[in-house]
Image (cartoon, rainbow, N blue to C red; front, side, top):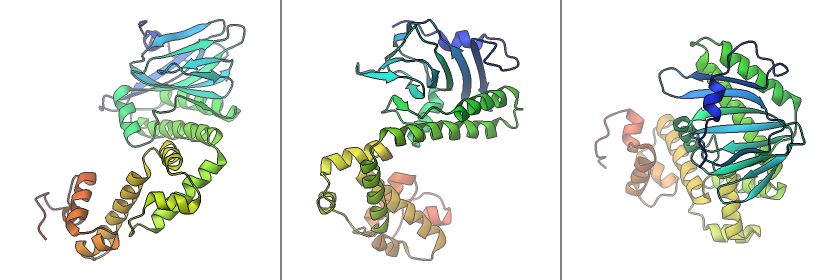
Length: 300
């Protein structure tokens, strides 16, 4: 593996008035409170380069947006992905990948990056995706303007305002990924997944036979399961359980229904099954979630 000096070289660039017309490299990085996490943002002109990074593992996460140029991203499985104006690609921590640039073209990119621990947290809650390295986003001058704005905010904001700036970064990253998903996904698949989510949410009190459900809708079970997981991030079964437990939380907080009644209303075979699944998901039993008491073994 080639040593990764990219981030550390960028950190040595002197800060100042941000103008991509006057500099080939711009980077701003800030730590977030005392969490140990950090966010970075920047711009790089790589015109004339041919091999950007080859067989490299980044020690942090980076989302790169291509403003100008064309090239290739080769993922950890050796699969090739074309890069062009509007491409957004992820440098996922610890994942071997290579990026190549057409040296005959102008190449400009903006990027946002996070430390690995922050990336892991964001992936765990579904804000970032780790199974798709490259997205194609429609080229848009407003995206460049937003990168410029975020760099200025990160560079100039006070420590007190930095948490708000961090939320803006996360929202922007999520928007870019969502745009890429909409562009890459087939409309028929989107409609299938959207319909299934609505159906699942309307039948939380039932135990669905997913194979029969797919048959009734004219879908292949394996194709549906893979498409659903690719789109939502979890399997249909886990999604149904998650939504059922979300509804349980609402009922526990906003109604006087007994826990046994809630378990019946949500299609559980017994209060014991419901309570244990709730505990596995949230770390507390339903009773203690409702009244805020200590998490002692629940009594019927």
